Image 1 (cartoon, rainbow, N blue to C red):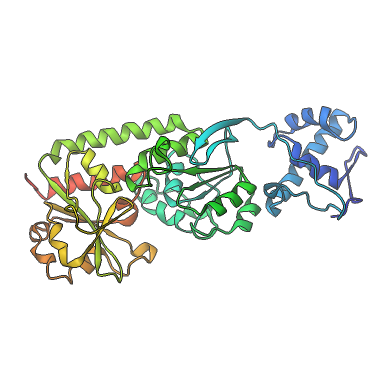
Image 2 (image 1 turned 45 degrees about the horizontal axis):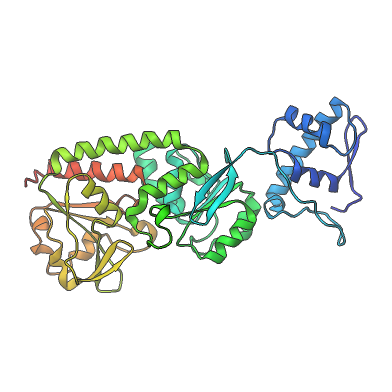
Length: 395
């Protein structure tokens, strides 16, 4: 659209399309016609009547939606400008808050509406506090599947657009969505974080306590601080408190049956000849330990530690000698072609494990096993407690 194209209201007021684009960047982000009309009274291009201001406000809303669809607002570019014209610097009157994150402090919308998430666990954090992101990385909808099945059968996962992998998201697609907030994690490359920040305010979540960042590396046991950082970023602390209490109730119930019972959390690694032992510094292990179970950790000097787990040769599967074995099914994601039990069953040591001999093996979806959220911590404890009670596992 060229600078000389005009838009005319029924009252005869003519507004240059370029000026309308400038207004779209400067105006409050709202669909309230009266609010926009009031704003135009002092910020419009000419002195307008009340009716003309309302008509211009309608056009402004339509134009902003177009620019968001084209990605122009998210990128800070005004479409249709001539080669020698410079876009006006965008301003806004949207209410904002200052939040702390792994990148320092940042100003974010007080009530974000179009959130893009580059982290599957953060997707579940948001959905659990009644905020569905408009887009997520490819694993986001998959990570929500057990949540929908167990908590909200009517959830429409298909409403969440996907924007590429968690490590290399499609930046152009994200810009075209027009987010007002982007959430990601510290595991993402900083150069990509910087490019995301050019599109919209970007909050970087650290899986651990912020005061220990970056000296402390992220661990899967840092899911609670990550949840709290996320809900602060979107202003949903009140809803979060309900999850804190629901989780504590499940912990208390689990403690009634967990005393003296040991649990091994193990997952096979495809093509490595190793398995992962998820001890107390992993998500599942940290949840079980808090609930009174004895979690089997790798002996000192055995295996290679990584992100709160330990990679151990299949020749030492005998280490997984807990009263209960919990493993995962990662076939949803294509991580593995078989469940953990199917893979471990080919190892001669498998049948010698006490939990296998006693038929006390619990297979969970990968999302619950490694979920990193309150919703999945509750599901994990529910499954583990029922396995102990129904399996009559006695200390």
